[in-house]
Image 1 (cartoon, helix red, strand yellow):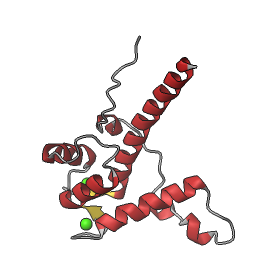
Image 2 (cartoon, rainbow, N blue to C red):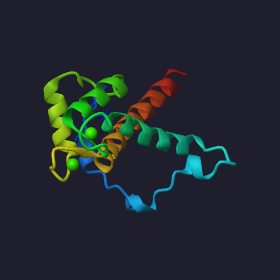
Image 3 (cartoon, protein in one colour):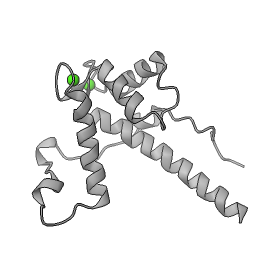
Length: 139
Ligand SMILES: [Ca+2]
Ligand SMILES: [Ca+2]
């Protein structure tokens, strides 16, 4: 049937191959704050949430712009408990940390963190598609 792996388990392996087309950080503007008159869109708010969640954990210890291994573990077990299977396994945290840490400085910066979110989003979108197909075939 060519369904691929449909056991619902997500890994970040895919995220490594994702090419991020993001401009340098200096060009970022906080849309929700700079456009006070207009209501931010759903996507704009999702982006702002990403930034807020990242900093909620990154600010806990050491460099406030990067996630240490402990901060990443906290973030995953709190914010990604539903999406990321076996995130409580310390080996999984280590593996994800290693996968994400593109510049190998032992910290996960925002750009590296985003690649996790992108990888998971792509995996989830595939699950969503399969879910839709299943629903359609039932009818
Ligand atoms: Ca930190
Ligand atoms: Ca890094």
